[in-house]
Length: 562
Ligand SMILES: Cc1cc2nc3c(=O)[nH]c(=O)nc-3n(C[C@H](O)[C@H](O)[C@H](O)COP(=O)(O)OP(=O)(O)OC[C@H]3O[C@@H](n4cnc5c(N)ncnc54)[C@H](O)[C@@H]3O)c2cc1C
View (cartoon, rainbow, N blue to C red):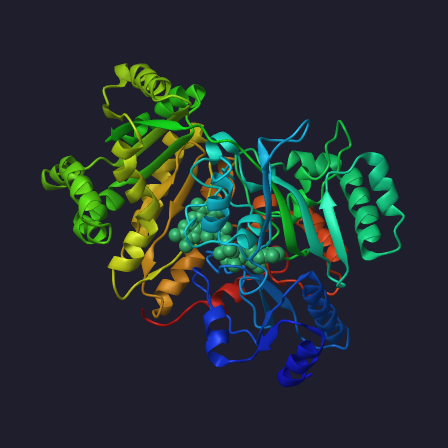
């Protein structure tokens, strides 16, 4: 079917709009990854019924042999190419952007409260509404100002508070979804007898329960042995999270979370929330010798910090250089206060005393006194290691470090011209115990390629999750080749240590081809089977999670000079 005919067919059945406008398509052709895919159409559904019609029409076309598929898109901040497609973009931001109730938990309800949301709600708006009730989704990503709930759920996002609170999958209670034949379903926690009832349905939903329960039962050992050993993972399909082996509780919402829109499109979520502690104090460690890092982590983690974050010497130096420009955007009073606060860091840069890694260990408590006491205790526990440390007694004092940590990616992106941020080894996780073995090997590897890029490392050091985002000139073929050459070498090191290729940013175009290396052929066969059960026609975001190739990476990389 010609694109115009498909557009008309969709417009006939949807209340929302469909467009082939060049500007709109160009806007949806990119996310924050290194890829570009020009979509044929953008559809803006008004409600789940619209999404359902859209999926039905695309499915019918596919049955007739057309090479057409669709990809969900929320705010488009994905770093892996997740929302990119040459088919139809399903844009949730325009209409499906309403929040439902936010309320405190009652009786035996899980967590401290919950919120109901559509996928097109920006996290910043979601948080405003939850904080009004004193509640928070603590798995928010560092991209909290620009990301939306659609991707936070579909990528199984995590962030600076994941160390204490876990990732989004832990908070996904219920998802309303549109399945690949256009039918509607609600995935939530079911008892074994409720699962049996669902299995009797003569619908795609029934088929999914029948097939998935059989797949999980027949392959229980294999799946359990591939449960990620590190504390966060967004790679593959979370087959280990669906069924509780002891209670038999079965929740497919846990699988949809993190599946990048490849199994179903979600239209409404019920998310559990927590009541955040009110006060924070931070122990800052200026680390010059990386070999002590494992010992620091070993001693600090049992003290239960809410966050344990880090950034490297490159970020530190760049931040100090660019501080005047950053502060200029913050208003005079705040800029003056932070400007003075940054003087010690500026002196470190001037005197060559920049630490290799700056560690931020933050403790949260209900009173400022108890938060401070925890930071003091952590400092005491490290006293014999001869470290330069200081305590920031409240959130105002520690703000400057959070600004640098949260802005590390933007610092590079906005201030080094002519080069493109290239997330391709941006999100691996290793067990923190292996740092002394792993980090020197990683540094040696990055050094080999240093003529091709500059980079910063920032990360969730307590979780072993590192964000390395090089800046590269992607117009050069040799640099694009580095992306294909270096990533498998880094992942080989990561996998040897028992780590994972992605803790939060997900597989997308950039990492799907590495899933066999990470999980092995048998598990990948289960991922393929899962995909087939949910999406037999392969119309939902094909090539992500299942079927993606190195040819895709090579073909779709951005080639233009920034
Ligand atoms: C500066 C920066 C920092 C970042 N920091 C973090 C971080 O700390 N942690 C983290 O996890 N990520 C981080 N990211 C990556 C990204 O911002 C997050 O993963 C975010 O949650 C994506 O949300 P989005 O709304 O932009 O999703 P999109 O980019 O629109 O989509 C992401 C994926 O979700 C799918 N999707 C979207 N809506 C739906 C739906 N309704 N149904 C099914 N599938 C859907 C898309 O198809 C796509 O595969 C960062 C990105 C940037 C640029």
